[in-house]
Image 1 (tube, rainbow, N blue to C red):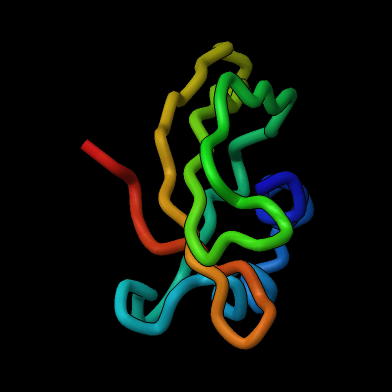
Image 2 (image 1 turned 180 degrees about the horizontal axis):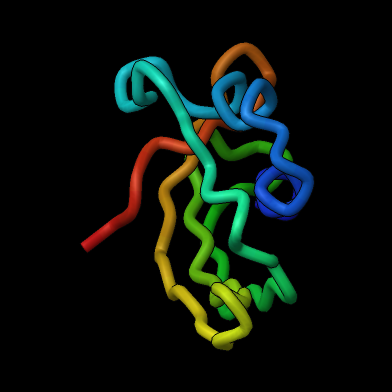
Amino acid sequence: MRSRYTAFVVGDTDYLRRTWHPRTRPETLDLDRDLVWRRLEVLRTSGGGLFDDTGTVEFVASYSDHGERRSMREHSKFVRENGQWLYVNALQ
């Protein structure tokens, strides 16, 4: 989760696509270069341990959009395939 947040911060779309599950990965990924990511706060996790194949992360990511402070909250699902954690989707 933290590495994907960092990829958003630096605009690394290649990394984001590599760590996105192929079943849910978008064809293209265009990041908004006007957003300035400020902070990631992990609120809760479940699973995702050494012997788990699934996990969830609930987080709040703070950012600025043209000087206006905002945040987004998401509860994300991840799966481990071939030893790599992949983002699947946002849970409802």
